[in-house]
Image 1: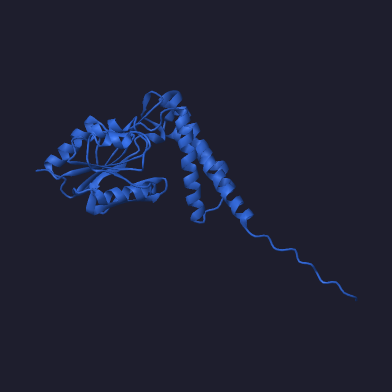
Image 2: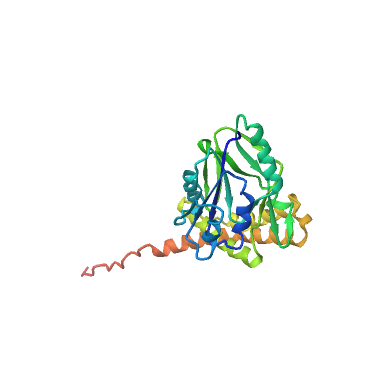
Length: 268
């Protein structure tokens, strides 16, 4: 008998995408969902697939992953976001691995393939974007810097060939809104850690981000969507450091100003 796998899904107001995600892990031995009090039908749809649906306040990307880790009951965990899908090829590859036995392997990583503006993005910074999402519960946990969580494991990791599908943005409007939210989180985290605004970060890093994405990693081969990705990602870097400057400015202005000191007057 193969070792059992718990599919662990974090979600919030994803009624349009969650069913596709759930269908893609129906072969798992358990599905656990943590819903951050969705106001749409997300939780209702999840209950069609599993009775392990929990509602909990949002703890951030890292905190929510570690929360659901403790709720799963099987030795292997498969992490998914609501806008992701295990492809049929990846499902089959995982099952082949587990039918023969993982051996000394404690984690599996696989490429993530993004669907954006009507096409699969196969170049630039978005691909292959390897993610370690399948791992032994007793050997791994989530770490990182908000809003970017990642799994680390103590042991051997194997790379699979098949892709995890990611339906990341509905359109450019959705992408801009997400970048606005993420850059706010990232700039606050940097400020909390004591990082400060530097002109070189604001001027040079966005240009390097575009050059790397569009030219070095061949984003140009994805047509206009590849150009949009590189440009908007570069804009996101610039906004991150602009918001860091804004936080510094607000902190300076919140400092109490010294009271005016009136020098005593007297006869010479």
